[in-house]
Picture 1: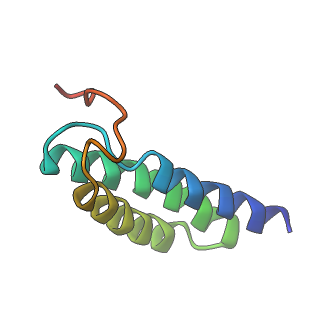
Picture 2 (picture 1 turned 180 degrees about the vertical axis):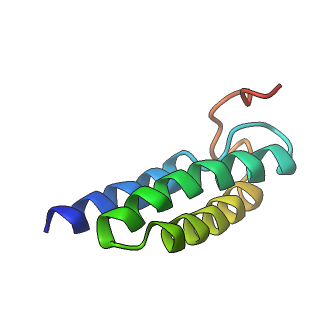
Length: 80
């Protein structure tokens, strides 16, 4: 039960933190990184961290690329 709750929290955080930056590339990179981390944690809780990281990274990059800075804006990316 705790593993499923932890995975759900990781998935929600993936969407909540999917986009830093103003350009599509910045948002895709930050979303992919955050998604991979959250996916790895969620996958670890369910027994497959590598698959979780791959899926989370892909979903995070997609969410970051498909949202605009007016929808989700976490500020300036750390690499800029």
